[in-house]
Amino acid sequence: RCKTELVFQWVQQLVVDNIRSNVLSIPPPVLTRCFQELSNGMVAFHCAIKIASVPFPFPYAQTCNLLLVIHWVLTPVVASNWSSSWYSALIFSFVQVFVLWNLDFIAVEL
Image 1 (spheres, rainbow, N blue to C red):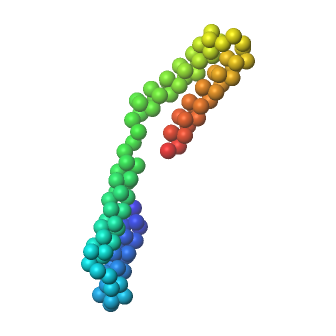
Image 2: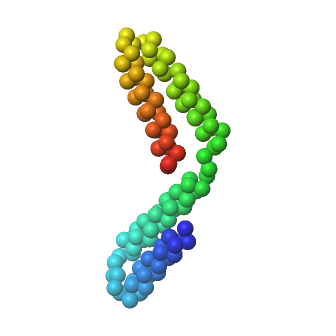
């Protein structure tokens, strides 16, 4: 986090130094927009840090896992009642359970 703020400060300092030495001879409205965009980037960075630092609620995660297990148990039963052949029930159950568990594992990695 501190490295990002340090680089932000360096970029701002380089812009200001080069304006003073007439390397960047740009009109003030363009210069203001440059600093505004740099500032917007830092605001977005700090918002991302806040989101990343908030932990995911443990009861919600456990409830999701419990619902996945219930789905895993009940899907073959329901699929066998709805379909006329055992292989279509097997394929339907496998795809449903596989997709939902993979979505859960992807969410855990995020």
